[in-house]
Length: 388
Ligand code: LRH
Ligand code: MN
Image (cartoon, rainbow, N blue to C red):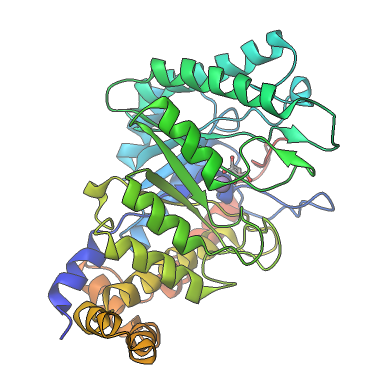
């Protein structure tokens, strides 16, 4: 029998980090559709993140992206967030939007441009120092569009040199999350294209270099839960960038396109006893709400992660292990599917009520009138976006 009390305690303690940029406008190369009520400033993004936490109870931190969220005083900003019941989480660097980075940032053939990019990474660590954040999240758009355009091996040497300098600057309680991505914006070769390359660089750097698994960054058909299981076993899974996709890096609501995959991923986390925040895995959303209302979409996304987690916690581990040991393929699969087929919404409603929250966060948000208020207040100024 599942230990329901332990499962509810684990769900109540879950922490899911929301991304500041998901509260702003985003789109595709075809169009960015502006929406009413969108934040204009990082403090308004933090206000919205605080609302997501207020209604879900499990989203106590917000990731920042620099320079989209740049301010003069990050200690002040951290205090602002604290006043609103959230904390500043991962600091995301941005070496993908400057004209100088057309042929690469830290991998660029030009040493002056590499210097500029590396200095941005080092500056981001000063922001960690100021906000008290632990995680420096590095994603490099660096890559090639045509064979021969540059030397694949030289670029790895340049990348390794920049990572080394950045790693050596980390404070004692800080770490690197090295995110990989198969393609886009580069369409022939990406310098950190997959988990293996990220993992190899992390091993070269040291124990405080870990891999960030963005669920939208793999080739179609990739078994992501295998990657998760492998990295957890190696102690090098640092974080997730959760979202979902039907085709490429669509950045849709996590669990929307493939809730079964999310369940399989969260099962490997539970199986490795890595769900609790003390295990050090950062569960972050990285999404773009191009056409849907942003705050309810993020609340829904948090709920999707909770539902996948609850189902993973309900897997009858003893029965599963017995069937696996017996080589009973169908029985083992049945145990797994039983958990996945369980309606966990009543259980999560109870968890929320025990946290003093409304059992239906999305409905509670709509009843709160927050959206109407921000539409009325946030008039004028420039809505936040990717600044591209
Ligand atoms: C790159 C990425 C990365 C962020 C960006 C917003 O595709 O996943 O994590 O910097 O999206
Ligand atoms: Mn990402």
